[in-house]
Image (cartoon, rainbow, N blue to C red; front, side, top):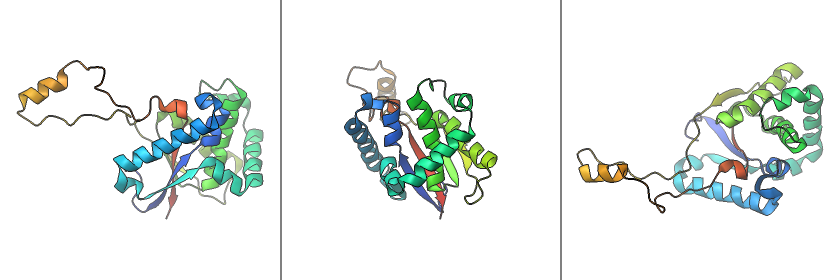
Length: 202
């Protein structure tokens, strides 16, 4: 969130329908939506200033605003790319739902008109597929988005680092972890699905 340019409008895209297509959370729609709600509330609690600049968009709600146009764009993406090209984005793209989710990602980027796509290494291939579609299909009505990849952020809440010269605190920080020492906001974010950061010029 903090890596995005200050003069841009930020969109946190929660891909709930793509998560459903890939069978995340056992394909339980309520569990997927709850996972995204937890993620958003956790981000608001941890980084309220950064989240104050962010528009949270649920993919399903955005699609339903103009479903015909959205699905036509996804179909056109599917017509453009060979199956192998889409599967190469992620080694796990073995099933139809995973391939459809990758095509939907390009549709998501077209829907937002984002100028910058920010994500972790897991999203880089999807972002580059979207950028390649712009170039290869001759999309000119929307500017070609830049793709930037950031190191993944640990969901582990880390303890405060010991102050310099505080030997006891430093020793405690190095001690073996106990069962109750770790607190995770989300246990395995890929189970919930991918979250993406789209940045739209202000």
